[in-house]
Length: 405
Length: 174
View 1 (cartoon, each protein chain N blue to C red):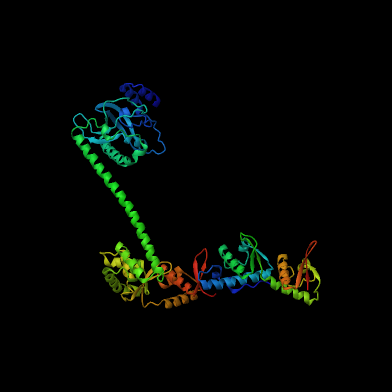
View 2 (cartoon, each protein chain N blue to C red):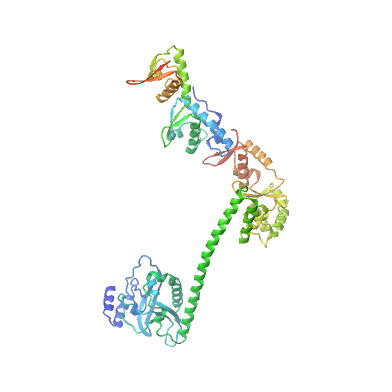
């Protein structure tokens, strides 16, 4: 069927008889022509998808009008994404046209002039430079939306691959009159501004990249200064720090020694100090930071704390002489513990527990003490680090024994 | 006489390489002495790493624990540093175990030689290691390479000289 139609087309056969032939086969679903563009710019392809192509949308019952003349060709209109790249370059502008008396709602697509060396299509020539597509009502909206999407996406990628665009968009506007023309001009202007803005921001993004590198560099230098206190003289260090500050990079050294130091954190730390006393006593003097976070936020109800604020506030416990401490274990687990809490006692009692039972896993130990498994494991690991316990790592589990070595 | 296993052998943590540095040192020391005494008892002079994994030394079926390959390598490395082990190949799959150092062997052999008044006589290596006369001696059954090394040690001391004969090597004691 395909070959016969293209044969007819190349001979410039009258469209009506063509229609008859097509209609008879249009009921066959598989047989879908791809209408690429305006009728005299249509090319035949087979219905098979090529490598990069995906079906964007498939519509039934589309009528294609050549200019104003109606060409009652009912086809299955399948937009193929990739091929459309080339075709969309042909589209200058498209718009919706509302239904009038005796006319259905349409989408008008304005196109460039046809190119010389185009492959054969249904029509060889046409006096109009726009086509109209008429759909069933609800699909029109979808189709219009899809077309807009494709147009905005593809327009940028278009240029290297596509066929050479004829000299400027002006070439195609042979019948730009009235409101349509004005609307089109507005659209053009809007697109221009859009393009300019994104170009301008491109430069900005490059600037930001450079700035990021500079920040990294100065951070690394500040770190080196921190490490090798002796190598650089006092003056130079101070000068360097002031440079960093003027660039807007707070010196990491001072940040660490004094904490982030805002009033908010100080107040928050005091509040936490009061609030956490009771829960900590209950839990044996130590709570994981995650537990603290949950507890605090649940108590507050509104005005919740962010994790960073909580950590910063906890870091200030020491400098504010509060009876709590933030402690970080080797494995990275952070806990809040009472200052009165003695680690040696805990370890000694841990050792006793383990010796009693012969050996313990973290889970068993947690159950024994009523602690969370995480904290129990930390305690056992600490005892191991001090040499009181040794470990037995097997397929079953990780057990701790008193260190008999 | 069956081998007496040390107390650590039945202590499960013994089969896990300890992360604590001090504990690990003690653990490795215990392993080294266990390996050496086992080899001495069994008169083993070479070990193959893969086979070793299954041998009772590293695999205690009673408590269902065995030493992992990485840990075995660590133990062997420790032995090598002490001078009791030598790798036979680059891939570290076979090794020589010297639960007694060549110098010590040399001394024992020389003692036996002088005790029996055989100084100034010549022996073949085979005679020394497998001869009837040496049957009751400790160095009976000593493997050739070890015997050679111990004799070389004696040679450097000036107490022996290794002679190459038609069908092998021999040694003369002074």
